[in-house]
Length: 348
Figure: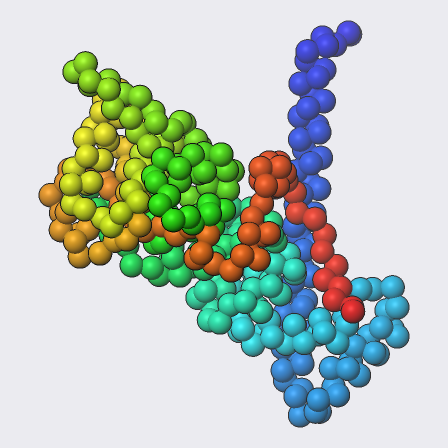
């Protein structure tokens, strides 16, 4: 019996998908086993500190003698294993979080985070968003945990949005936002900042967070024969809603919230599909007093968050090198579900 070409190619694609899936699970399983092994070795080292400072050096030498072709057991790496077990003492957290990261991601976080909560937050964000090591370095370098997870926020999302969108929107909000690829210049105006954000849209989206898709800038709306222009319009695929961002190169003023409230009403009427969630707004201001913002938002009927932003003088210049290019982001998206083996070798 002859097989139809289209049917054959469908079967072929199905088989190929099965193979890819099995390979992914195999690599993921190998990575989990390796990370768990490193943690267990770290426990052994901690339990035998009585043997003194040379214990790790002797252990590294003798492991290499027994397994000359196996990498990842240098004295330096064994010290990281000890640090791993000290930093994450709960084996359940190791299996649920640490084992889903590469060893390089883990060791970087051991060096750069100071408390377990911070480590677990960055680890969870890396897993959820598929951050490469360079992307993780960017977020740690710009203190995303402090700005997004524990920073003071001014928003009415929880009062106006249903669960779970309200929590997700609140968690997504940062204060301040860091656009360190925009040069701070004397007399720079809002439109110039906006143009820089659009010209570097990949970096802008990296800072805004996962799920943001750029829809347009100076987006035109006509209401009762009058023209209005939204500074920046995005659609967030995680929140399933439009996001209107208004940029102000001044301190926050209560009247800004009223204008954005009007824009959100227009977007909900003109652009929002019945399957979309309510549109949300973000006011980005040069300065923001939290109490003033909270008072201004209290009786606003559209979900709005108010945050500050910082330009290039907010972080050290060398951090600019860690910002991924558009090509880097594209590669990251394509390889999100492809975990590469990491032998964890730290030999100098």
